[in-house]
Image 1 (tube, helix red, strand yellow):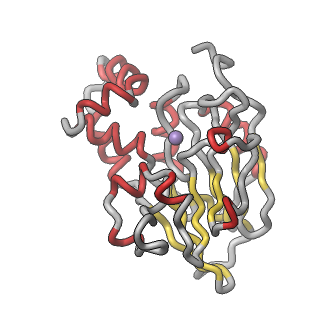
Image 2 (tube, rainbow, N blue to C red):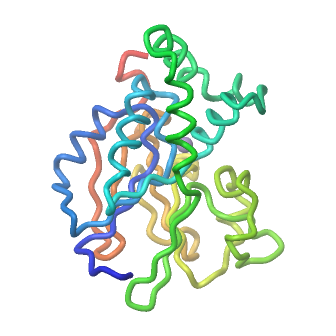
Length: 238
Ligand SMILES: [Mn+2]
């Protein structure tokens, strides 16, 4: 790490819940001495997908803010580019509705979305006091090689992988990921510091995708974390 950051914070899935996230972000009082890495999935499920994407696009222009790409952003990109129409119908439908209605007054919107998502890296690597951290939306496919080089992983794996990562990864680098809500793993809505005794920190605490969902920010230097109030299903009027 070139700069000695006060905090190195990662934020789990937001999923269109920008308003609750922004009140959390205010509480963090982020300064330029903090590094903040968003783990992807800013859109879909919640009601403020476009606003979340645009906010992340602007915020990540700051040198100490990194917004990684999640499977939902990748899917939206693929939809706009005309690929994977099947996935477009599975996830992303809420965002596509928002995009369609906003396009009526802003026809350049799809191009801006493509530019914003293409700027989002798939992972970020960082070494702090000899400990390597890899921030990524989902992880790597570790079924055969239990510590595969992230550089050779297909995009699809980096943003979609689940069990093939967290049940098989055995590397020394600590992965910091979102993607799979901890509730789906039978856990309470708190960050998981070491999943299954592996070097994996899991920070998707459900946002609006689980009954007990909330959004989590975690500082890997201090192990401190901050959360929104419970968001959960239906609390946002959808
Ligand atoms: Mn997600």
